[in-house]
Amino acid sequence: MSASQPVEPFIRISGLAKSFGAQKTLQGVDLTIHHGETIVLIGPSGEGKSVLLKHIIGLLHPDAGKVEMEGIDLSHMKERQLLKMRRRMGYLFQNAALFDSLTVAENVAFPLRESGVRDKAEIDQRVHEALDLVELEEHKNKMPINLSGGMRKRVGIARAIINRPECILYDEPTSGLDPIVTDVIDRMIQRLQKRFRVTSIVITHDMGSVFKIADRVAMLKNGVIHWLGTPEELRNSPDPDIQDFIAGRSGMTA
Image: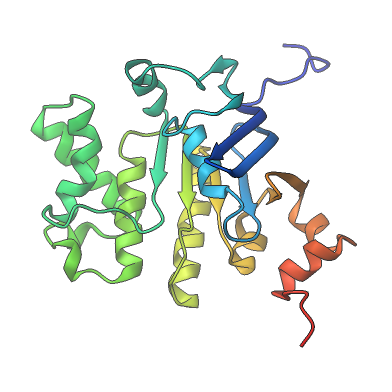
């Protein structure tokens, strides 16, 4: 490929629209995401950030527009077709969504078993590698109820990476965590990106995390991408909505 040829984005979102009854959640989202970058989605609660992630991984289908991965349209694929594409992605749900009846190791192994891996030695080795990356190998036989909130999130990350995905989607990975544990999770997101060059798409309301981990930031508001740029451009933006969001100001008078 010559230097003058544009590089195909890893994920391209075009005109994405989704309503739930009378509620118009996404109203024409356009966004490109490149290989190996960490893009952080910010914006007020209820603006559709989680809905957007679920479209990327194919848990929701749009009313209009499309999501493409390397030029392949995922928007209206059948479930069987989507399975192959989903194996290229890992998903960390907002509450980690662990199975309470399974041990840490069994939770992490679940996606492998679902994808048809049956060899116990391979499963054990890959679970060991994933738990080692999130520094939880010694807790593999514990039940989720015996883990702290931060540890549960780290188990969720281990499960998200077990299939060695090219892209990881994080839905509020530091929600409800104290600053020290938040820093641990942020560093893990950075470590995975640097070590494996994974593409990371992160929803967060923690502005400290935004400035620490993001290559680019996209603000979702009124169902569209209101703003897009680097963390430094975000910090220096003259947009009052951006500055109010960074500072945590409501804009309401007392």
